[in-house]
Amino acid sequence: MVAVFINKQFVMKRASLLSLLQSLLLLLFAYTAVSKFLNLAAFEAVLRRTPFISRGAAVLAPATPLAELAIVLLLLFPKTRYWGFVASAAILLLFAVYLTAMLLSGLKLPCSCGGMISALGWKEHVAMNVVLAGLSVWGAREEKGVRIQESGGTNGEWRDEN
Image (tube, rainbow, N blue to C red; front, side, top):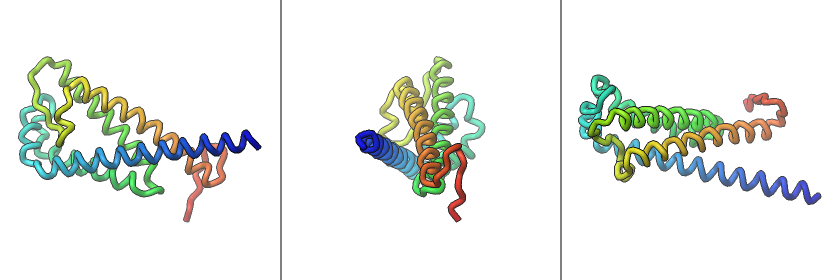
């Protein structure tokens, strides 16, 4: 009886942490996307001055906040939340790799981040992205576990809810 109670408490805390992470990522991606859209011309101008991606700036400028908004939509709905965490991990790792390449280039680089995130230094930004990517991987694993548990599966099977 005590073990069941402790297990339920543990599951509830994990679910609360998962919800907290989901909320954090929703706010992060919504904020950065809106910030980039509101300053799209400036964002594109910064991308044009950035090594490695300057040629694709015209496409990347609107595509980046659109991808961030797509992640927001994926994270909002229970049926797509797992993919939202996966996409979040992927884009954050992509950003971290890009930022690391920029940092290692030794060049004086412009920051193309949105809003108050642009106040971070390059190293802090890489660290933040890596930590959030790791948490997103954890979120995907937990979300998948929640979905399996809800469906009554035990061996990684997904139940079609239709």
